Figure 1 (cartoon, rainbow, N blue to C red):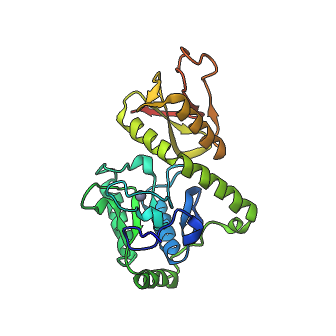
Figure 2: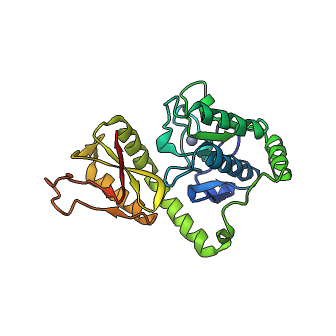
Figure 3: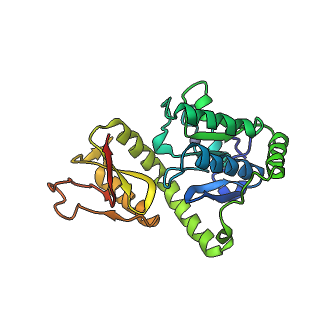
Length: 272
Ligand SMILES: [Zn+2]
């Protein structure tokens, strides 16, 4: 079996490495995380991040993903299900200083309380990745750290009681699968949006933690036909049950918002 760069097994089949669903509060970590000790620790990190650093929002958090490390040529720890990204759009890969000093202090405390088995992506020696937390250490070290957290009563159950409901698990798995399929497109979209001044950001009504972008008058994103991106966004927003307004039908070519524009239904929070 392949190995991720933290030395643990990785697999394109999440079932082969025991990936389980994970959510913290209202935030869903698509595709889940590796179960057992790793999940105990990552859920602990996510929960404390949510309460002490910044409220987690969905979509914007990521877990298991079978892919290369974005900043090197080996398999990402996400491929082992042992890394999470918290509020990715707010803390993009490669950008330093996305947290305040107060938030940094909280992150340092959380990582320290994990007893040396969690590394924060902001501490990477190469490209910083401030959204990212990953498990490091041997199985024995990870087991000891997880036992200590459980013994302290500081851990949380994964999800709520309704996670045991097979219907809920099936629905979450379907969403996880869909979001995973979309992830490369969404990553490209986020990177493009972050580099363009003409995008308007919206908060979605009924989902106060979320921020979505809409393009204004642009027809392509980095060579991806905007209609494809538009359809992907519709699919994701629909799957997640997030309401949005679709202005394209007014005039798909020359309408006020342009071809392929998708405007989530909510309050405008700013123009980048
Ligand atoms: Zn990551």
